[in-house]
Image 1 (cartoon, helix red, strand yellow):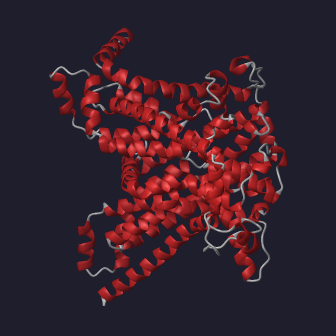
Image 2 (tube, rainbow over the protein chains, first blue to last red):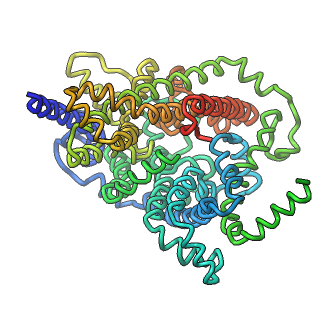
Image 3 (tube, rainbow over the protein chains, first blue to last red):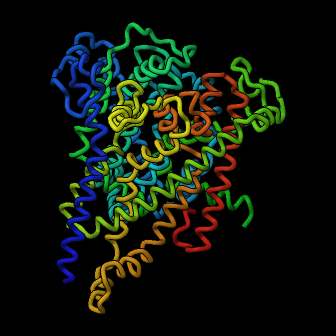
Length: 294
Length: 309
C-alpha cells in the first residue's frame, strides 16, 4: 500500500515539474521561434510557438550588415576576457591573504572588505567619482575596473582557499620560499577548481553587464552586447507605445525588424546558453558553497 | 599596553607578513577607491552639486535635497513599491522554493538533475534578454498573451500602459528567473539532513507527510530563517535591471513599478537632479544599513551561529 502510494506521488511530482519546466522554457522558445519566422507571418498572425514557415532570413539580415553586432561582440569579449583575468588574479591574491589563519591582520582586513557589503555611499557619489575624478568614463577601463573586486567573489574564494592546509605553506617557508612564490607555485596550482568556479562567476558578471555601459559609455564603438540589446529594445518600446519620444536619440531608420530583433537577443544570450550545460555543476557548487559559508 | 607599544606590535606583525600584505594590496586599493571613497562623497546629498566645482567646491544647501524628495509624492510611492514588491518576492520565493525542494527530495537523483537544469536555466539570462522574452509575451499587437486573450474572446490589454497588472507580472518574472536558485539552496540543505532520522520515523510508522512536517521542516528552519532574513535586510534595494528593462521604463507604470533604484537612476541620468538623486541614495543606504544590522541582531538572538557578523 505504502509503496504504491509513493509511486503515485512520485508520478504526480514528476508531472508537476515537467509542466513547470515547460513553463520555464516556453517563453524563451517563443523568442527563438520568432527569430526563425517570416516577417510577414508575424505581421499577419502575431507571434507563434512554432514558426508558420521556417526561415533564417533574420540571421542573414543581421550578418549582412554586421558592424554593430561585431562591435558588440568585440567589446563584450574583450571586457569579459581582460576583466575576468584581472579580477580573478586580484581576487585570489586578496582572498588568500584573508584566508591565512596565522596572519593576525586578516580579521581586520576581512572587515574592511566585507563592510562594503553592508554599507555603500550609493550610486551618485560612485558615479561622480568615476566620471569626474578617475576620468575613466567612455573607455574600456570604465567597463572593467569597477567590478574587479566584488566582496561576494572574495567571500567565495576565501571559502575555497581556507581549506588548504597551513602546514603546506609552513613547509614551503622552511624551504625558503617567499609568500609570492608560495602563492604562485603552490596555492594557485592547488586551487584550480576554485579558480574555475569563481572565474566563471566573474565572467558571468562581465558578460551579462549593461549597467556600466549605461552609466558611462557614449562612444558607439564601446557599446557591449547587452547594452546594445537594450538600446534596440528601447526603440521597439518607443514605437509601440509612442511614449518618451524626448529621450530617444537613436536613428529610427536603422531599427532592425521584428524577427531580427529577436535574432539579436538569441545571439547575445547564445554564449551563455552554450556554456551553461557544461559549467552548470561549477555554478551549483559555487552557489552552494557560498550559501553555506556566507 | 601603551599606544606606542601597540603601534610597535602592529608594525612588527606587518613586517612579518609583508609578503601577504603585498599580495592583498592591489585588491585592498580597489576596495578603497570604488567603495570607500564614494562613502565620503555622500556629502553631495547636502550640496547643490555641479560637475565643475566637484565634491568640495559645490555650495552647501543643508537638507534641501531631502526636503524636496520627502515632500513629493514620489517618496511614498517608491518606498511603498520597493518594500511591497520585495516583500511579495520574499514570501513567494520562500514558499515556492521550500515546496519545490521538498518535492525534489521525493525524486531520484537522476530526474532531479534534469529538472534542476530547466529550472536553473532562466537564472543565467540577463534582465535585458529577459525583457525580450516578456516583450514577446506582452507586445500589445502581436504578443502571445493578447493572442490568448483574443482566442477566448476577451479584449486585448495594452500591457505597457496598465499599471495594475504589473505587480503580478513582476512577481511571476522574479519567480521565473530566481526559483531555480532558491530551490537549489533549500534542496542542498535538505540533502544534508541525516537519513537515519527518516529511517527511524518510518519504522515507527510515520507517513511521508508526517516526516516532512516533523523532521524536514524543523531541521531546515535555521537555513530558511537565515536566507529570508538576508533578503529582508536587502529589502530597501531592488534588482534595477528587472524594474527598468521589463517595464521598458514606461511612465504609465511608475505607480506600481517605480522603486528607489530606478528613481535614483532617473534623477541622476534623465532629469540630472544630482542633489536629489544622492539624497535619495543616502536615504536608501542608511535605512538599508539599519535594516541589515537589526536583522543581524535578531538572527544573533535566535541562533548565534547563524549571525552574519
